[in-house]
Length: 278
Image (cartoon, rainbow, N blue to C red; front, side, top):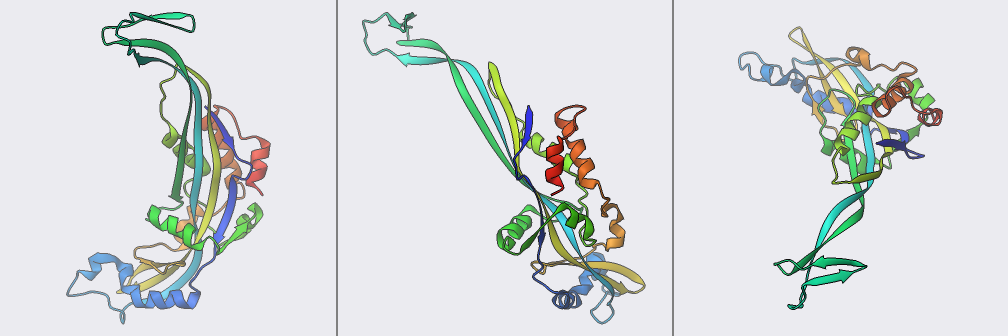
């Protein structure tokens, strides 16, 4: 199986927040009790309230998710046999293209053929780059509803923007998962070509506000979605996501590792690496 990348397969897209800091804080003030989860809510004798919970810290960051479009195309030959019904009741054999075929008891002849086939399978995936629980539907909505509200970044801008988090799921993992999804067998007597083409491997950055809350000497984090205003309790502050801070070569190293899955011992061509750094 050969792996290819389209000319414009790689893009870095930063989504513009629809909520400003003030609007996000207001949502957090109204929902800060939920930062501590259901367990504390169920303590009837001692539960947090809006009056007893205080926001002590806040931040904005951009969390990554991958959008992938890939296609596998297999060109192959398949040996088969075609059955043809013979309507003449008196015919006991048929001559076709210099070959003679006997008519069977079921009044059919069976012609051996070689089928020239082309099989295509398309795979589209949305993979969130952190351990935060975001379902596919939300990521689809992010792209569909906010595609006009995004800023395309260069590789250098991604490296320089400290609010952007590095994806925990690296490019090598994304390629491996995609190829696994595209894996399937065909009934082939001979495979002429088998190619996986990555048409889009886009890295989106999605705005998230995080509010650290204090109650009864306990702290918890409430996260507010910067696009739709949804809240999630039990979140994390950026300092807890140190493993997701960028190192200068995180995309380059990952890109090199990715080809090891496809061609053992290989690395991505220099032209591909240059495209990743645009």
